Image 1 (tube, rainbow, N blue to C red):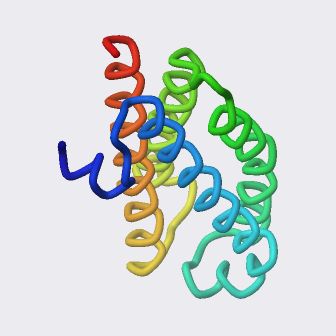
Image 2: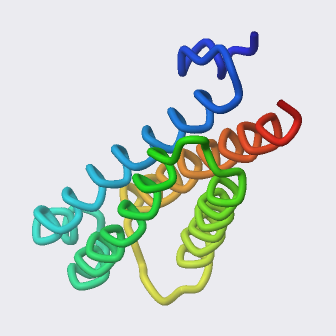
Length: 138
């Protein structure tokens, strides 16, 4: 049993994938709500545009719905797991792209915020790929 399986208390590939997806839905939902509710506070703190933060938070709504749907499918869907992983990978690329583009000028805390959430999402994407691959061989 791997560390990731132990972390998500999963004894099989299907349970692992569903729990990783559920964790993604909960954490994405929390981030989305935080960005919507606190954009006015976070914007100046991070030196990021308030409309950008609020818009990103709102964009999480359909994503969270998709991930929650994927997490509740029985049996777990390999295709949905890989779709969510792909969307998460795209998010990582877009997050670092935003920092490199020069279209925003976050302060140091803003850069750390964007980079840290991108790394977190990248880890989730990798766990989702692992779960989907193991599901295919189960």
